[in-house]
Image 1: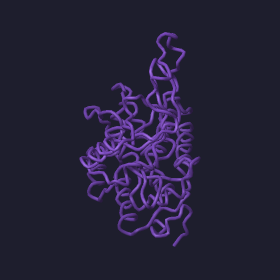
Image 2 (image 1 turned 180 degrees about the vertical axis):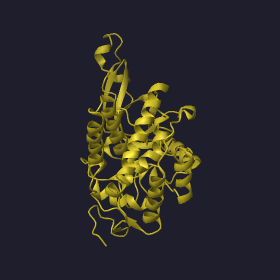
Image 3 (image 1 turned 45 degrees about the vertical axis):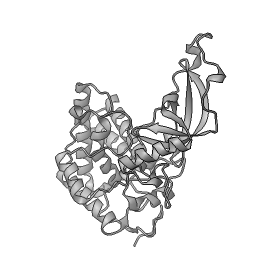
Image 4 (image 1 turned 30 degrees about the vertical axis):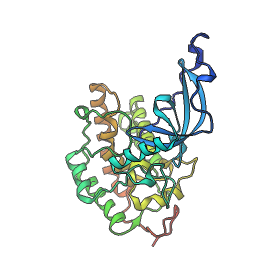
Length: 316
């Protein structure tokens, strides 16, 4: 699923009394199960509440089986009644896009925190994505249309490219996972970079702080949806609770995967060219910082067997 937009800014006070729709015009009710468009797909959802916003009904929905972080306000145009006819539309759309039926609601037999894609990335695909900047087909349910012409280029240093390949081999060939929680965590790495920039430049600029805040936000949102291999999902569901942020549990290994996905994710954001260029330089500087501290931030081997799948697994 893509970035959720919790539209809390608008309210019914914007409208004059004569323009406000009546409660009789409300199509969906709190507690009602519905089908909701999110990006190119249709998901099962439940209406939590309904309010009149900017002269129209808005509904706060929870996507069934997904983390509550994806809850959002949507308009009636994105909702459908949970009828047999509309379910058939959902199935037809999923079939067209090659989606497994267990993924439609974000559930599977093994875990709750699931991706809307199987994320079957082989070693060669990782190499192509990293070394050539090749844009993978969007299967993450991100809303909107990406701007390929504005696709940001993130040149990942060669030692970190190898780190990505090793990462893939540990999980998918050797059936080994990163032991969680990691130390340092993503949150701690971002703090260390801020401290590094403060010492190096004498001050950490507001723009640097904003970039780091954005990296953390993207990581927390993208990890369960886009950054996990299939074999890691059970571990994630056990390690990340409802009130926990992935950035306080995962470390550099999964943070680096985000930089493979960032060009695609940022293509959906309306950013001026000049701002985009500055952002690119800041991201490259952060990657150089990761490379400089590679032996400290990254594991040389993974110590949890896939079969264990525990959030706090034991070392081998």
